[in-house]
Length: 25
Image (cartoon, rainbow, N blue to C red; front, side, top):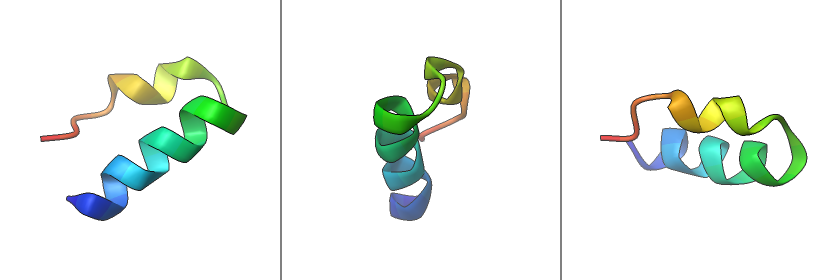
């Protein structure tokens, strides 16, 4: 799930922090 982890990192930096709620594991 490396792609999802990247999306969360990029999203957290340029998008709402709510993306962090996604399952990263």
